[in-house]
Length: 200
Image 1 (cartoon, one colour):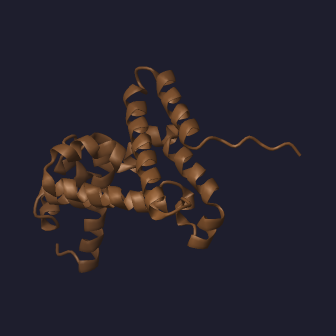
Image 2 (image 1 turned 45 degrees about the horizontal axis):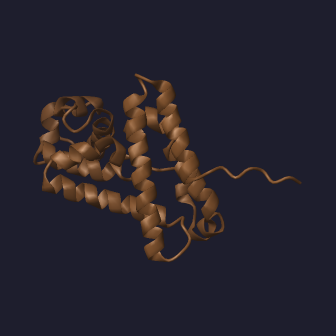
C-alpha cells in the first residue's frame, strides 16, 4: 500500500525520535535497526526508504537528541532570562544533576549518554556530536552574566563537570546507590549552591 508524503514524513520523524531515545538508553551499538523500527510500528526494511544507512540514522538521531530540554526554564524569553539568570542557572544545574535525569537517559543529555560511543564512531559522528555540544554550550551561556569569554569558560567547566558527574552517578547507581546520590549532591552544591533563606 502506497504511503502519502505526509505519512512518510511522520514515519521518518518517528524513526528519528525513537532512535534518539533508544541510542541514549542503550548506546549506539546496543540497539539494532529492527528494534528502532519495531518501536514505531514499522518494518525493518522501511527504515532504508528514509535513510541510506544505519550510520546516517545514528547521526541524525544524535543531532535530534541534542534538542532535549534541560529544564522547563529553557523556554524563557531573553528578557526573562536576564532578570532571573542566577535562578535559571541554579535550576539548570539542579535539574541536570537530578536522580530523575540519572535514571532516564533516553530522555536526557546525549553528551552523558553517548560521548564514549561518539568518540569511537569515526569523524562523521564526531562532527555531529561536536555540533550538539556546541549547541549545549550556547544554550547554557545564555543564562550567565559577564563577557563572552568568561561565560564560555564557565560554561565549559560547568558542563564538563556535570556530564562527568552524571556518567559516574549512572555507573554507580545499581552497585552503590548512596555513592551515586553523593556524587550528584556534591556537584550540585559545588556548581550551584543553594542560597539559604535570609532572616526577615
